[in-house]
Amino acid sequence: MQKGTKSYSILKLKCPRCHKGDLFVNNRLFAFSKLLVMPKRCKHCNQDYYIEPGFYSAALWISYPIELLLIIPTIFSGLIMDNSHQVFQILFPALVVLLFALQVPIMRISRAILLNITVAYDKTLSQ
Ligand SMILES: [Zn+2]
Image 1 (spheres, rainbow, N blue to C red):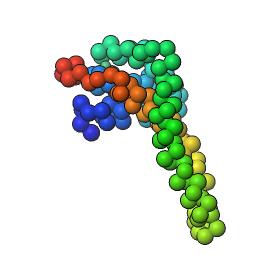
Image 2: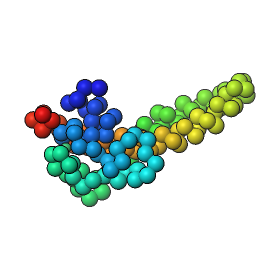
Image 3: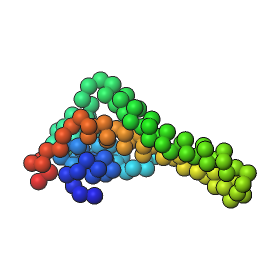
Image 4: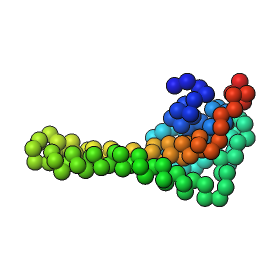
């Protein structure tokens, strides 16, 4: 991933303006504590992460289609392959648990996508 691209900021959970500051207090993709806790401003460029009240409720409309893209094929594959393959009967519950585990990174990435839609990258701040 190249610094300066939207995908860098989204997948690394970095500030969309400078690509240096962290978006979350606990900035790993799979976090088990402080899942959605974000600092008020970027430590590097002072970009406001809370642009307006309720800003991140719009991130639901980003995470929802991502979830559908993952869950619908899983449900249909479960319905189709349930009785035909014995391995799938063991694999399917693990797949469902994995989908639940992916909730956290998808919520975090959705917030990053929303911020990247709203805030433009400033090349001068990253040097
Ligand atoms: Zn920043």
